[in-house]
Length: 167
Ligand SMILES: [Mg+2]
Image (tube, rainbow, N blue to C red; front, side):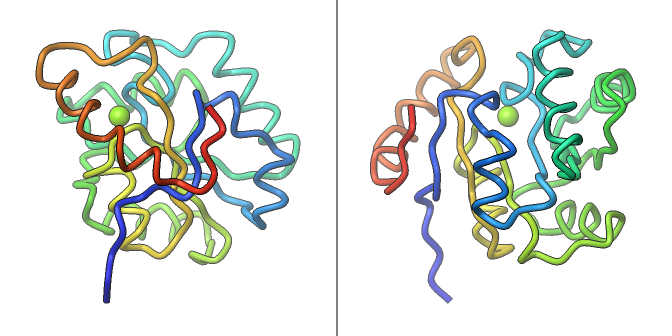
């Protein structure tokens, strides 16, 4: 099996992933990364913008679940409980384990799902391995620290190869 690291769609941020776009893609469950995708890592509680986005997806019948690699025992739970969204923590992306667990819990098949995230080697690769559309966003409020700056520079050519760059 050959795997591509090119995201299927690139967006400026999560707000650009609309119910209309997901409907056209045939997606009824959006699995999403947490840190730098829905909020900067340092922000412990969801803001009004992410709450509103989630509500619009729910109103359109889309199931949303957070699949996070964050190593903290409390980060994903604290954020997701406040948002009222189910989550899988310590997901080990790019392993498919966390995505499988999420789909099983929601009773969804891969053909109904997509994955949203900001990192190529965890989020995009996990989606590709699962065979579901990989939606990629810019890190919210920009990369933090030297390593993340380098990482996001390295990701740039892969994003630009996406046939659907909507930034
Ligand atoms: Mg992230």
